[in-house]
Length: 359
Image 1 (cartoon, rainbow, N blue to C red):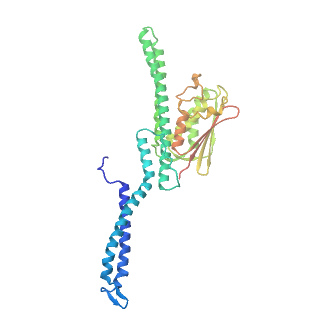
Image 2: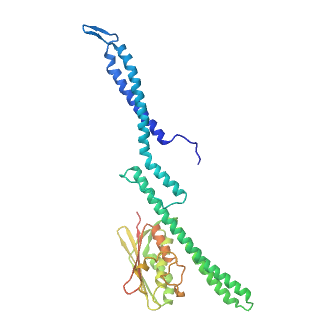
Image 3: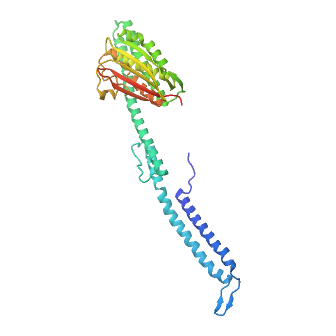
């Protein structure tokens, strides 16, 4: 909002310093008048050695000195106040310059205010931390938007190609065309829903309530049991009651994503998936383990990035929208929990989600 220009904070502080100094000087001179001059006789007194000046004589000599003293205090207060105010406001000017640079889109600049920790140092450090988070979040959004646009372009391009081929081929198989278009459309819908869910988790726009992770694990296992049986994978869910504090819908999505990921990225036949829950002081733990191919530690660290599918896109039965673990990571972060991924000895992946309980 535009405001009318006013005097600067430095000038206000300067006037405050000078005014305080003038008031202090005036009070000191008033003390001299009240407690010294009032005891002096008004008229001069003659003595054997001469005359003792009276109160009137002292006042006539005192007033010019007082005027010069107050003038000196005024000049000293203005000059010293201007200098001190400039020194005090120097960190604030650095913060202002950094704020203006950030407003133009330059988030890489840091204040890096030196000196001991005081109010300005705490403000500068907090601002630097905010800039770092904004820069990281913006970079993540740009990377995610680029990946998402690429992934969404693929099913749309496939649909367009199928329609062009069908238009140019009068003898095309309409049933096969509809089936392929339905599959492509289903993939596009799944990807869009995953993107919306990921955005909702990042914005933390949900209500929180106590949620038993053991019930969610059983529900996810029951839902995905037909998929596991179809692929010849043994699915088992067990564990104790583990009550977390969060969104039931999002935590169910988290559990389902982990179990589905464990089923899809598993051995082609004879693999296992184990889902367990446990409780710790102040935390509820969900662990999902699955067998599978040996995983490199460097690869495991990238699995939570959007549109990563275990480093392979060769097998169509492993294809997904590539957002399963990315959604899990966002949901865990939105709930203030931790997500740990580790490669299992002999192959496969172990995922441990730790969520805080109700405060």
